Length: 601
Image: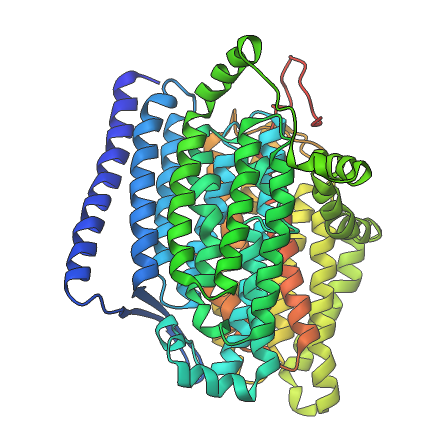
């Protein structure tokens, strides 16, 4: 890339982030000098019906102030650093685009005044994280790890979706974070709905744990270090990894009086800190060591929140973010320095704290730390492998089976919907569960399909239609609401299908059994297909994003099995879509004449 073009890109990012930092500092000073009262702004009502309102809401308080200043300053610092660090990199423009995309999502999240607005920023953080981890998209390992990290993020996404679903039933409105600070309002609701309050808090905790790499999700953070060092510093050392802490801080008034939840948060933080500290001490990679050290510190922040020390948690977040960013940015220099020190001045410690333990316990703990407590294999054994095994048992499903089975059943479901006055209440109760289960079956098939790319894509689209049909039997779910949801799915699905069809004509053979790396020769097709993937997963670029929230708002609080099937389908849907994109457009190019690794060590 010519130097002038690099200068233009880097200066654009530098000026944008610099102006944002300047404006943030000026406004924070003004806000502090003017009694620093929390501000709430209900900005845009996107969609409204008699029983539901989707609106964009912004909120500004002490939590926003800390996250805003730390985020603006560190992003400015990393932008300056990246101008020189990324010099002459092939993806120079792509890197700065991804950083700016991340910064937009970060600001939406920290300024969010309700769950819906927060979820918009949350989704942007997730996809920008995927793009930055897979920055070296022609290599196997970065792409593999990017998919792995996105998989964990997807679990967190569904956790927050279910929390939004239950909060709609708890408050009977789109609750804002400002209202959550009303102690009398929260206390009166939780006294009558104690169990629902605990479930919402635990779903929030699962989301926070997934985003902040707490147990059992800790193994993804070191894998995320495959991206460039600047993105590792801003994402996984400081800002993105602390968004779980932000979620707990933002919802603190809701769960602070639930003693059982506080115990669980404290225990989770304590166990994570102990485990991550041990793992960090045996790492051979400096970036992995910093990653686990950051996980341990975030575990301590969880403990502080459980103890009600929210101001200390904010201060701890800022200190940890600055320290980890500095450590990651200087890590290349530290590595060269330590190599020299090992040759000339290295003196091992004669005795460590662990030497006071019984030898069997000491050696066992050491081996467990070397194996990272088998966290990665546990996730595969109890989460991903069972899903793959279920999908493999669906190999009998093919195009012919779909035409003679699923299409007639769907037409039967539409006929039942039109004549629902003829159905008994018992049938109306079980039909949504049946149809949502069929949607889950189809998306499982799409997730494990290894041959036909277009069929996998079509199964994902069909899953959304089955979900819409299932929810249509619930009261107050109107036809125009279903069309709002399905219009976004149809546009994105059609666009993606034609991209796959076009690519198939050019490249003749495409399957899902390996990475093909076609973004190397077809970058424009890859970009268009990425947009289609985002639309199909409910990313906030189509009406499907509002439609997903609408669907959960129409699932009754006693329809737990229906909520489980819908949320499971959304998890697998996101994984299947990103898997298709990664396998078709990322990784080592299938036509390369050079030998390359297709499996990690």
